[in-house]
Image (cartoon, helix red, strand yellow):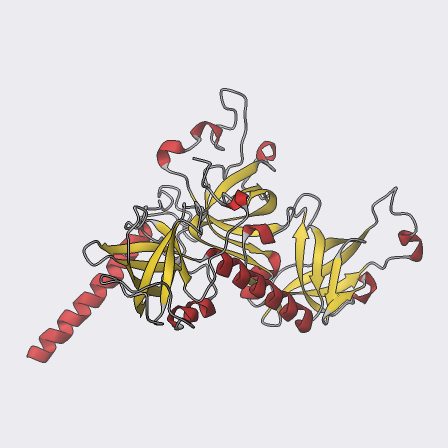
Length: 419
């Protein structure tokens, strides 16, 4: 009887969980559930958003402030837009835990050239700050302005270039036709732009997943093969390629800026970008959020964001090659156990002055916690000698393992003096 009761209880709990998840999903609108009676998911400060709660927008990067981590995108044209509202810009800020990908690897905003066609996932600005007068329902505002129908999606959680977007989905372009360049095309490029056509079809699992599309090739298109550059003439029908585009949807499917013809060139591009990412993080620290503070014991708990290559977290447990500083009664710097420095940063991840504004101590514990969108699943506890005001729950920080050198950044990357 007891076993039956326990089983019934278990079934009841499972059903309750399923129903609660169903109710939770029904509370907000998603790209998969276009019920316009539901609001889009609203971000909550100090909390990570649920999976698949963001809104997808693709477009071309036409403006960027890599220091403040803000972007301007010209959204792609689609059937949901009125012609009068096409091509208007969307301005957005990257969330502290946002991920950026370029060449199928993690990246920083400064790695992505202007004009690159991107795929992004966004959340709306707060309700009180929405530009209702500029939305599609009221395209003509009192001051005569117009705006994209996506104007309110100003907080970006993920960006990917075309290379990454298709590689992540196991998709590739299969070339069916290339309009050849003629010798006379190369003679005088100063008076005209030579544009040739490349016809390709998206492939997924070896099968076509769409209609053939015609892209533009120019003399400036970068062609990669093996470990170096190739020529436009090396692009042949039958090849499976990845491409990055610009001017997408403005004049046809888009203009090819870069094309990778084989696995070697694609692997090399990804590996180079990954090394660039590692260097960027090692110079600026691992980003995360303070999840708890024990004021009495001076222990700060940091949950790291998932916008970092996981291999870098392995270096948190590396012992120091030599003792750091001098031991005191309250705080032992004299051993070689894993240590590190906490840097207070703004939500755009810019530090004030990371060389002088850092406090840290012994890494007491490195833990695995449940992963979720924005959260890496890695958490540490650091016992500090002194707590700074920025070491407070829900505050964004960066962390340097003591084996990493904390060097001075260029002056424009320091917020000190801008207040």
